[in-house]
Length: 337
Image (tube, rainbow, N blue to C red; front, side, top):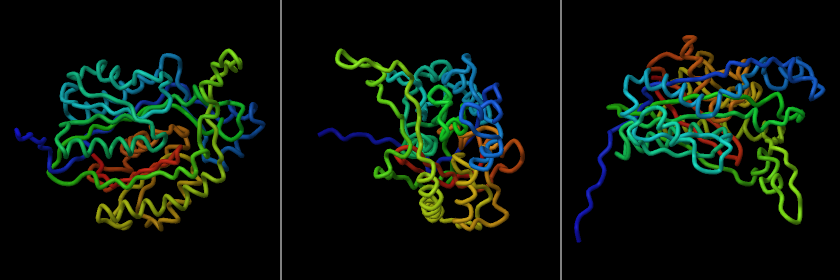
C-alpha cells in the first residue's frame, strides 16, 4: 500500500486585507415610507436606519464583488494570482447554477483558483472566514478570498412593511493568509432549524413558474421575516454565542477593542451589547444607519467603515458575529488587519 502525502499548511491564519463596495444610489427613508404607510421616525425607531444603498442595474453581484475584492487584495499586498480559493457568501445571485464565484475568480485574474458559493444568509461571511482560516492552516490554500455580497433589493417586496425598509445592497471582501501567530480564533457556529421559517424566501420558485396544472404567479420571490421573534432570539441567544467565541479564543470582553455584529437592526445591536455587558471602551460597528442590512456583506462593510474612520485600528482585537435565515449563526475573534 503506497503512503499518501498529506498537505502542510501554515501554523496560523489571519485577515490580511479588507475591501468594500457601496452602491452609488443612496435611498433615504422618505423614498420607502409611502408604499408601507410609514414614516422616517418609525423606521429609525424600529431599525436605526436613516438611509440604505440600492444597486443600479450596472452594479451586479459580480461587479460589486470584483470591486471589493480588488481593494482587499491590494490592501493585503498580494497579487490576484496568489489567491488559491474564492468563497462567495450570498443569497442574491439569482442563478441556481453555476455559482458566481468562478466568474469573479476569472475576472480578478486568479490562476484557476478553486471557487464556490455558500448560502448561509447573513451568517455567510463569518462562515467563509472560518472556512478560509481552516484552508490556510490545513494547507488546502495559501490565500483565500472571502466575499460577502448581496443585491437584496432584487428580492425585497417594497410593499412589505416588515422588510421593505431593512434590506439593502453591497459587497465586502477579506483576504485570509498565513500567519506566525493566531489572527483568527476558533469559530463558534451552528443552526437552529426549529426557527427555520422566521426568515425565508416567501415563494417557492415552482410557484413562480407553475406547471400544466397550476399557472405560475410570474412574480419574483421575495424575502419575508417575522421581526419580533427574530429580535428576541438574536438579542439573547447570540449574546451566549458571543461569549462562547470569546472563551474559545481565550479572551474576555475586557480584552476586546472592537465589536462587529451583523448589521441586522440597531435595536438588536444595542440589546446584544447590553446582554454581553461590553465595557465602554469597546467600539461597536453601527454601519446599518447609513447602509441598511446587507446580509452577508454587512460585517465586512461595517469593519471597513470602522477602519476608515479610525474606530478599528490595525492590531485591534475584534469580535465578529452574524446570524440569519435558517437560523444560522457564526462568530469568531479576529485581529484587525
